[in-house]
Amino acid sequence: MGKSRDRAATLLEKYGNAILRTAYSYLHNMEDAEDILQDTLIQYLKSDSEYNDEEHEKAWLLRVAINLSKNKVKYNKVRETDELMEELVSEEKEELSFVWEAVRSLPEKYAEVIHLYYQEGYQTADIAGILNKKESTVRSDLKRAREKLKEILKEGYDFE
Image (cartoon, rainbow, N blue to C red; front, side, top):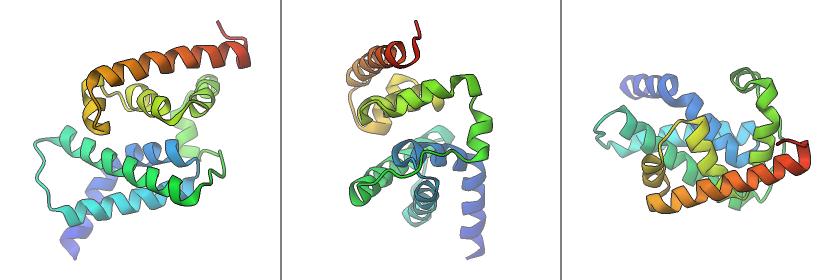
């Protein structure tokens, strides 16, 4: 049990914030996001998979977190609070918070590519792997997401 606890602690330190942010972007509820973080770590510990490198490992964890989050959204059918915990607020520049508000109003397929591209720093090829989509589809979704985001920001925030 000690070895699993050590592995979980290492994973939590390396990837915990990324998994938490990803789950929160779907669930808009910190308690649910924390549940997804825990469930993702449990799935990792059960999997005994081998990973080529840290990026492969992180991508696997984020893919699991996304799938678990989508399942939880379907199960709950509720997106409750829209409060961010202090550590997420401190990571986000206050002057850009209205942009992330606008991102959350996008359809899920657009919000997820924006999140993975801008917040997590993945390239379109990596996002395609994480979401099991073609890279051309990811590029197209990213382009449409930017267009929709521009419309939302123009209308809601008088932003050019």
